[in-house]
Image (cartoon, one colour):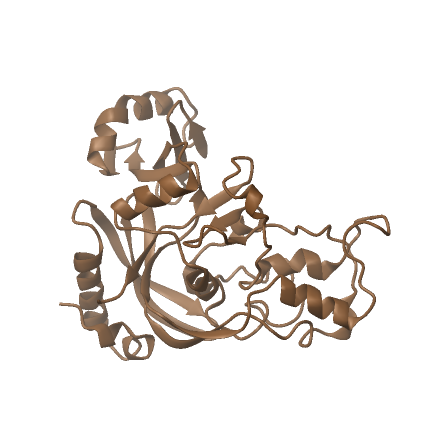
Length: 328
C-alpha cells in the first residue's frame, strides 16, 4: 500500500533507506501498468536547487524513469521583468548583425521588462504531485520500446514488438560497425547507451501530437504539464534561471535539476498536456541581445509559437513520458 504522506518531499527526506525503497516499490506496483516490464531499479542522488537527496530510478518501456517526490507550495513563473538582472545585462548584444528594422530594438528598461514578461509565464504557487519522469525527452517521431544487447542478444521491454522486429534489429546491427552510436532502419532507431553496451530501441512513428498522446495514455503515461515542466527544469527555485538571476554561462545547466536532461530542449520544443503550449525551444525573436539568446534556457520561457505552426511536422518537437503519482 502506498503511504501518500511518505511521498511528500519533506517526509521522504526523513525516511530510512529501507522505507524509501519500499515506498518506491509500491509506487511501481500501483502506478505502472502491469503490462510493462520493470528492470534496472537503482538508487539515485539528485539535486534540486540547493537540496541534494536520495531517490530511485528504474527502466521500463526502454527508458529510464526517476522518481520525484511531491512538494507543496512550489513557486513557478516570473513577473519581475529584468528587475533582478544587472543593468549591464539589459542591453548586452551578441555578435549577430541585424538591420535596425529587424528583430528586437530596446530603448529603455521598460522595453526589456515587457520582453521578459511577455515570454515567461506569470508567477504562481502550485502543489506538485509525486512523479515518475523519463530522464530525457525524445523526438516526437520516436516511441521507445525496449533495450537490446548485441552481445547477449537479449531484449528487455515490449516483447510483442520484439517478436515483430527482431530480425530487423539484428540485421541492422550485423551490417554496421560495432558500437555505432545511432542506427536507423526502415522502421526503427537504435541508440547506443555507451556505458551499458546496449541499444535503446525506438519505433519510428508518424503520429500526430494527438495520436501520440493517446498512445501514451493507453500505456499509462502522458506528456508533462506546463507546471510539471517548470518544476522539473527549475526545481521551484525563485530565480529566472536555475543558476540564478544573471545571464547563464554555457555550463550553467550542467548539473540538471533532479538528474534530468533538458539540453535537447534548447533546439526543439517539448510537448505538454496543453496542446496550445510548447515549452523550451530556441530564440524566436532575432537574437540581437544576449538576453534573447539566454531566456529560452529559463524554465519559465514560453515562446508563444503561433498556433498555426502547432502540429507542423517541420517544427522540431520532443516529449517526455511522465506518470503522475497521485491517489484519487
